[in-house]
Length: 478
Image (cartoon, one colour):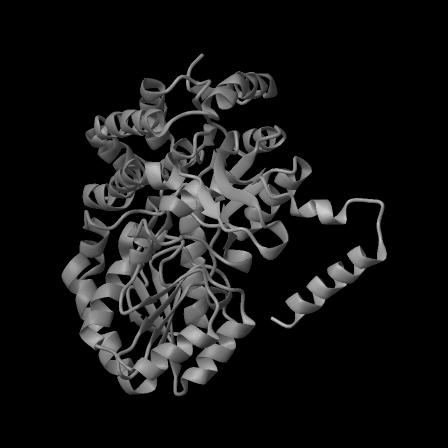
């Protein structure tokens, strides 16, 4: 049997069943054994660096440097963090006894959940599939991976490297579309890790609920970026343009809407326009020919983005830069639109492309009130050198992460939990947080020589009740 399976329910059931005895055996696996699996994954991945460069170029024109920085490097970093941290992560954590458990010895142990399902999206088809796999393996689980059907060339390389590193009874890969995903979700997995849109995330969660499987949902939303009048405009422009256009904006934590203070609006937008010309070309033809700008994943996505741009301009938005598109070639030029009306579709939907709508503000509280009324985003970005303003945003906002005077870097930090809140996701990934997502925290309590519970054995007497109520009253005063 190969790591790449047909989509029929029988084959899915067969590989799922084959993983059951392995998952049971791996429950007692050591840190050394888990490290060996991680090293095997790393070796197979790095042996296919050039093949992955070519595959990404073929699927959607992603530059090789971006493949290295955003696909390979994060996975290798996750593996390094897990190899270094596993002995510490796996070590049971002692818990001090409470007043009511005097004489006992307690600890929290971390058990593998068992058989896990990882469903990845098309925008980062290596990092969003192999990254969670690293956490699953570190925690001692088996896994079935279902990558997106929109990246067939990358998937072919993934299939090869997984087949080299693992038997399908350990890690298997299933390809297919919606029907395949539905058949997978009908299996009683112990944990489901999904990266994708909130709409599909709801369906995944409903299917997992039918199996009583725990979930990690890495979703998305409209991640806002705020530039206040105290910001270093050069730094803000440099990082904004980069963060928005990595992977041609097809990034779940890319800045989705820019809120800029009126006093610095003109200067910031002018600098963004200059940087776009420097990095991608000063003419439409030059931008279209740039090797440093990826294409949209498919024609349908390009058509949607082109329509968002055209509708916003028709509604009165000012075109600051870009605007060109060639749907047949899946090309969308880096585009900045100022003063976008609130009712425009581009102001309501997650963009997921190289288009940045700009909203001018006079008072930060107005921006924060608007964000508070909207769905909680996966990321919030703030450029400010005013400590009071930074503190205000941190106190009044709710988001999966907050990044001050930078962009995207929270994803690269293996010590930070990466995840959303509300509609932007459930649970966290990366480092020890990913390890815990794929682990069951099991309470273990051992009775000691002192049997305090004996005082409350039947037959019950009045003095026992008086002691119990006195304990309750004493604890209530603390």
